[in-house]
Image (cartoon, rainbow, N blue to C red; front, side, top):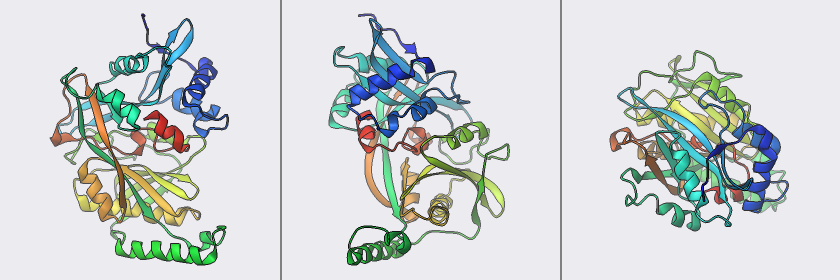
Length: 357
């Protein structure tokens, strides 16, 4: 069967949504399949991609496999760049065995590196066949990405909960005690300045890279695209050290949960990164009255250590699997990964997150 990769446009949005809903067995009100959300992540113009990011295989006009790509351009310590994609909303019909795997292989040609995280046992079993090194020398696991949480207990927010009062007091007291054991590593020299939109003052746009890591390149246009995400409240901040611009921060407000969607600074100091993760927690607590916890994702180990220093509690870890068309990654230039490198920055429906992995 000759399957041809097709880049679908917004005029086929309904077809794609119906296929994903059927494949994921998602309800009609699933947040990740709402029209405005799908249109934004699949078809809204991004400065780092040409056209639609939604790709399908069809058989007799019907979609049998789909994936959307999240692009990221990385700047290495040597000053060179490479382009990566992260597949999301990956789904395939059982009527065409192997279509999903073939689709992943086809979209790999769209960038230098394809990145993915391990997920459900079924997904791991399928994708492991592409990452054992037996089929291609550049398919491998390069480490883990860690999920972490920092509790931000609030007595006022707890009054509205239906939980019995003694349980609320015990829970908030327990969280406060835990936080006292993991104090924020705030430095008086760091500050987060809120911005409505990013402009040319944004640092970390290259060509210099003093971090010793492969950092994601973020342009004002790209971050402003993220600020327009429907269904999730993004806020942007410029990070300053001693009044000098050193990086940026994106937070996602989802009510009781706030996420560190993106954080990049031009530093190779673990203390600086820990201070900025602490600053993100402090900023979330001040800015969002309902927020009671902050979540983040980080790789490589250098950033995970900084998160723990900032009082976050490490949670689950997922293997970072890469397919390189050319060898561009090495232990000396591990890519900095956060929520914005995938759909983790804004995905609301927990079940869909599992299904897509």
